[in-house]
Length: 567
Image 1 (cartoon, helix red, strand yellow):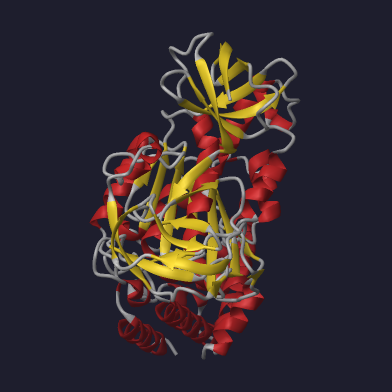
Image 2 (image 1 turned 180 degrees about the vertical axis):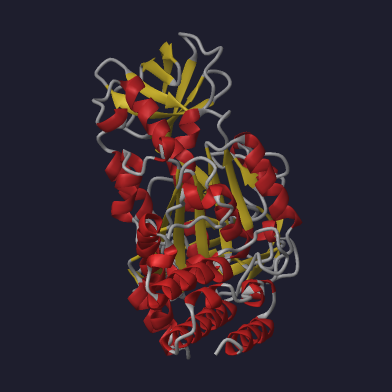
């Protein structure tokens, strides 16, 4: 159907002539520039659409065309290693086939398809029909699309094919290499799987104290300057996911440029190539259209689900969901919706829930296992963790990594607060470690959390009475908390050795600190003055994190030998 623009109010455009033939959330194109927009209101005499591009120059009378589908993105080979905007249109060197005009016309780009299925038999959604070579470091699997099943009537032979040309026919339905999918509709799967495997991030404070499950959810709230972006970039660099989808939602352009430059320069320990080659970057920076920012979150999750269906473990890193919520607030204000707390729409909680609920460890339609893990940053104004986005986010995530301003200003990075963070899946993760030969993980974690909490309580008391007024055992608790913070929880993103820490080294550092703390307690019990123990040389233990596991053990032994001289 076609209509005409009658009024333009920023990104909101009123259209006449479409009322009887369009539905809510349907995609339309505005003007001769074919600006994408989504129907958000349907009235008897007009339709209101929100534009995902700058509407300057769009005037009443401009033609409007309804596309007959919701906001969708093309999924196919060529996403890995690319940089796209919030509607999955390429920026800089991304494959040109994803450009809207290229998709509408005959696509010149060709890829090499190798069939793996046998024609003539019955197939179901999710089964592998073949693979595409040259689509990145991971095997790109061509699957039977959701909702399509029946007899495999025809399968193309090995060769080079355009992306929009069918390579198979299943039950009378052609199956091309690339297809559209609505971003707000979760891709289907067979069943959710209750697993306990953690997503290893390489960051000690996260993996040892507040881990996140593969298929789980985590949020990173923190004020300005607390290190959210650096922490998320570290997770993107070092986590053990197969595919990383990095969504820069409303971030500054220079921060996105720095993140992309670092990803391009970093070698991938799995493939030996570049880490960016198995990363999809969705950049909707603060100078880009605000309504495309609202769509970018859903676009990122949709791309992650696409690779999940191939049997891969994916992670979506959204930086930040606060700016996504601000886009919701701006749209609600323009459309006249009744505002709720601090002007955010009343459906903010529902929108956050719908986003985080798309994280899951699943059995795919093809019978494999894949996961989508969602990690979202939250940027509360003024560091106020009681504001609506932060408060509502905590209702829906299983792991919280709260960043503390005091820790950041004290140069303690990552500035993750052990008092304000939590992990609701620690029991399941402890059982997973126990089943794989590390039954001490849960006890180590609990002891570290307890020691940090006790040290914080005593530190508050010591500020009033002075450290010298505390008994010896309490002073050793304070000392143990300091050693744990400086020897284990601190980690340098700039160090070639310490930027990434495997779980074995984390466990070794915790063992080393606990052995030293236990020895200090024994010395106090034997009558050694606490002041002498506090003045001992702990430098070997504190620099142990800059070495490998063997060096950690040697440095711990050196520290214990030095304490032995005090007995």
